[in-house]
Length: 484
Image 1 (cartoon, rainbow, N blue to C red):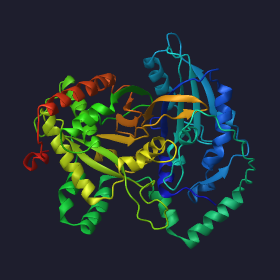
Image 2 (cartoon, rainbow, N blue to C red):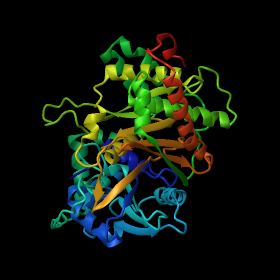
Image 3 (tube, rainbow, N blue to C red):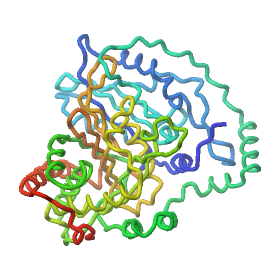
Image 4 (cartoon, helix red, strand yellow):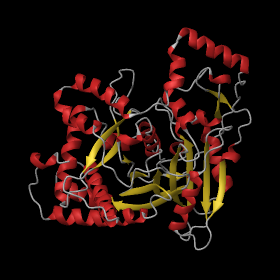
């Protein structure tokens, strides 16, 4: 039987009303001549669902909790149940869309059915429509599974004729069969019972133990980075008990402007993005009356794709291996150029110790890779204690060519990041066709002022551009790069 692994079991059993494990996002499309409707979206998904077999399966728990749950085919699977339709009230603004997305994504999925939903959102003022995708984290498990948003898109506006593949669900195991399989697993692998008990335990102590092993293996050059991972992060308004409701706020930045800063300064485009986010968080903290000294930092969890040297892979540069790295964002530093120096310095250390997959390799993935990589990044973040970091930031490069869904051109794609208890903000960024699309997921009560961060992103980028244009021959400043 196909059984959930320990991480999936932790995500499944650890879910509650306040922390639904929903990942996904919202994509905005320009309809083709003749329009686009719900029936067309249902046909598209029905023709592609065979590429994501997990999306026709549901989770079945083993009686008495003898072992981890198993995946079973849903004999009553109905695409039309999962692909739904909604509409914005007049005037159909982007702010109304963000509000609807927040409400949809905050609702837990029906655990008795395959764990995903998709919504066609009509009524937008500009004549476009949106598609909201919502999947449980366990559906994208890092072993080859992909998010459904990735398979619905094509590189051409031509609509391929695809005949849905006939599907015959496998018979669901009976309770005695589940019990027998669970007992057999315990006898042949006794640790499976212990995994069930401990799979939900994720704390700093365990992380520190893993880090200690990593230090021994990688040498003294990463001791500074490891020490940063173990230290308790700054107490901030981002770390508080969260409720069940969410806010979702979106914006976009020009990729050319980010590259312009990169071309006149140090680090990578990703370093520039992190610096812009740092500036926005600094402004938000000060707007709340927080007094920041020059050494103040916020700890960010930054999921990064890592090259896999498995010789069995045809293309080891493109992989679903994702690691989570912790970096201190210098929110106390007033000078945007020095902030960039510090972030570039720490990220360079990480690149020297891990086999990072480059942006070009990621953007070259077949289909639209970012939905899957965002899901994997949030999955990695869920395995760490919420006390280990202040905010999760997932930045995924996407293709710069246009993509289409049944002939409709995608013009924007905003990621949605799930929150874990104690984490009031998640930041997702996806680059596509010359823009970086930003989605902020926030607890509704804790971050009523989330739009201050949205406004701060534009201000921070402007500030960084102006400062970078005045600098020449910038170099990393070792003496200040590791402040905080």
